[in-house]
Image (cartoon, rainbow, N blue to C red; front, top):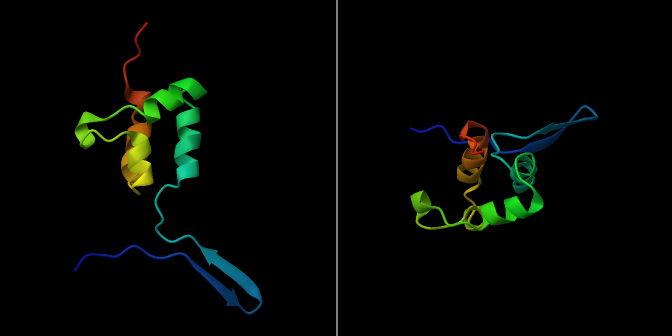
Length: 86
């Protein structure tokens, strides 16, 4: 049987509030911050709207809207591994 992800929880433990994030994946905010570290505003807009052949022609923006945040974060993490052209 597969291990299911832990959910975020908030508990009151003897007057102390405990907040646990669980196994949440990346958020849209985290993805956008990571993109901003590698692209200008224009470059980020172009990248977000460029169709990806490996993902049925969907753009990163469409993947994010569809809830595939892990896929987009994986693409963003590859920015540092791409060869630079000069």
